[in-house]
Structures are given as C-alpha cells and as structure tokens.
Image (tube, rainbow, N blue to C red; front, side, top):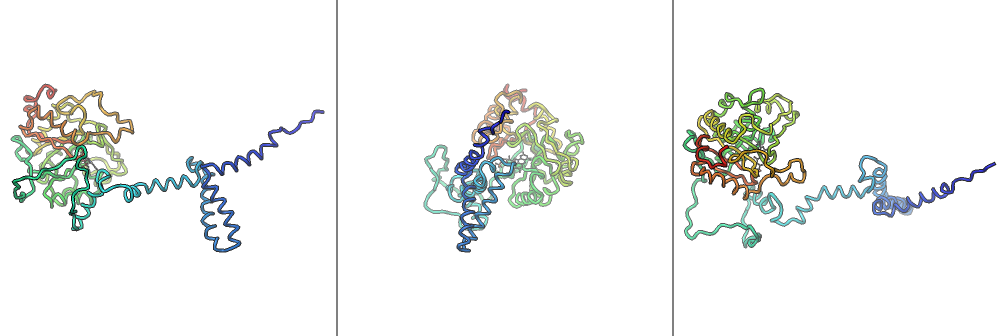
Length: 420
Ligand SMILES: Cc1cc2nc3c(=O)[nH]c(=O)nc-3n(C[C@H](O)[C@H](O)[C@H](O)COP(=O)(O)O)c2cc1C
C-alpha cells in the first residue's frame, strides 16, 4: 500500500510565515506600528512595577489600536501600507500652509498677497501705524522691479480722487468712473450679505459695483451704490423663458438710475469659453428671482451668446444695448485669448488652451502686463482710443473694454483684421 508523506513545504510554511511577519515589523512601512506594539507590551510590564507607567501605557495602547485598525481596514491603501505613519503625514499636510506662513515665508514672499501687504491692510483697518522707517525690504535690483521717480516740481495732491469719463459722443449718459471699482462677482457666487457690503462700500467710496453675470438683485439695490450691470451668456435678469435675450426685460432694469454702465461678458478667467453652472441646490428663490430662472434647477451659463456670434454682431449688439439702456455706456469683458475676440474672428485657433488638461488650469489667462499690452495694440491700430474706446485691464489679467461708437463706425475705421 502506498503511504503518502505530508508535503515537505507544509512543514516549513508556518516558520516562514512567522519570520516574514517578524521581518515586516522592521520594515520602514510598519516600524511605527511595531514600535507602538512593543511599547504597549513593555509599559504593560512596567506598570506592574510602578503605576506611573500606566499613562504611557494608555498612549501606547491608543497608537497600537489605531495601527491595528489601519492594517485591517481595506478602504485606504496608504493607511494599510503605512499604519500610523500615513496619519502623521496627513497631519503634516494639513498644517503645511501654517508652517510655511508662520516659519518659512518671508514678509515679501507669498501670492497673491504677501505678509507685508496683508499687514498694511490690518494696520489701516485698525487705525494702527502703517509706516516703517529705514528703507525697503524689496530687492530693488531684481528684474522687473518698478518704481516712481520723485518730481522736482511736486504739486498739491488733488482734493478729489481722480475720475475718468466713460462714454463718447454716442452715449447720452456718460459715466464719471472711479479708477478703482468692484470686479464682477455674482449674487449666487457671493451671499446676500457680501453683495450688500460691497454695494455699501461702493456708495460710501464713490465707485462702481459690477453685478457679475448673476443679475441685478434686490440686494444690489439696498444701499444704492453705482452699478455696472453685467450681461453674460445666460442673460440673467433679462432673459426669455427659453434663455434668449429679452430686450423688454433688459430695458426695464437698465433704465434704473442706479445702473450707470452695462457690460457684456464674453468670458472670464475662471470660465474661458466653457460657460458655467450654478448647481440646482444653490438656486434659492432669491437667486432664481434675480436671474429669472426656475428655483432648484441647475442654472447654466452657456459657453457662447445667442444674441450674436461674430465680432461685428457683438458691436451691433452693444449698439442695441446702448439704445435700450437710454444712452448709458456699454462695455464688454473677455478673458484674453491669443486671437483677441473683437478685432479678429473667434474660430479654430490652434493655440487655444486645452481646458481638459488639469495641469493647465493654473496657466489659463494672460499675465497682467502682457495682457494689457496685447489688448491695447489692436485698439491703437483701429484708432479706437481716439474714438474713446477704452481698454481697461484688471490686475490679474481679465480685460474689459468700453465701446462708445456704433458698430458701423467701428467697422469703417477698422483695419482689415477688424473687419469680419
Ligand atoms: C466669487 C467670484 C465670482 C465671480 N463672478 C464673476 C462673474 O459673475 N462675472 C465675471 O465676469 N467675473 C466674475 N468673477 C471674476 C472677477 O470679476 C475677476 O475678473 C477675477 O476675480 C479676477 O480679478 P481679481 O484678481 O481682482 O480677483 C468672479 C470672481 C469671483 C472671485
């Protein structure tokens, strides 16, 4: 009769497994967990010798329990592979910004606002001293450093803050604008309190508050600060139920005295040509009323306008808005693309950014100085500045322009690149 002997590897399997487990404890991945187990056993023994060790035992046991949970759970691979150590990493990541800000960053590092700039804001807000003697901390020989020269014939400072008149001969109601105004930020993106606070600031400071594309809401009207009403591709506040532009609804609100200028939004840095969505959950009754959309339904800003589709049609639309708005200045805002939307056709530009690539999200839009130079050039060629078409750049590179002539005039005096 044939007798079978047990397979030879079965006899060796158990010790091998044991050795492997002990070996694992000394690998980098498990060392913190292994130490907490070792500490638990050690302090358990020591606590019999002296009760003072009970506290340390408790700490070691907590670590051992967390480590045991980490190696046995199956949701997070990092925790399973690096029990306890992964949690220390998460903690460090969490406090990384504070460590940088409090210990590593210099007063002049950090964007968009460094510590020195933030300190000035705090000091001025609290009425504290905001001057520092003994020179500058800036590297005045660094590339791109800008400065103002002292005048040998200084003048008395102006009594009133400087203002710019926007609107040429086609505007029967030009607007005397502050040089600093509040950028477009919609009600919906901002809360009712924020809208009221900004508009009150505009009223007190004598500057204008851009509504953003989310409509001219009741909250914009509480304090009566000057308004630039922005019209985006969703025509919020001036739309028909099907989302197209409603001349009647536009005229009603544009005629209000508080509205000083009108702005067509083509694009903004955060939504360059792909529109936007305010999720249905955020579309409250008030937001729906301001925008003229149904409550609780996703509120879509389409990627393009339905009222025009070419640069010339845009200029014609601007002319129409000016008439409907009773002669108030009408501008447009665009996120600047390699082929500037107005002087050239907006189609098939191979150099357009690829918006699907995450790595490019921080690189969309044009830097302020380059954007400013680029947007001025076509207007200079079109002799538009003389005709009071003003290009205004906002500091992070979004660009808007205020046109004051009719589309016909723009067309006749434009160079060939402007003629669509
Ligand atoms: C909360 C928020 C909402 C915004 N909503 C709009 C908007 O509705 N329409 C628009 O043209 N730009 C909008 N923007 C863009 C700003 O108007 C501005 O162009 C942008 O923030 C860059 O300027 P800044 O560097 O001064 O912030 C929004 C920006 C923020 C931060």
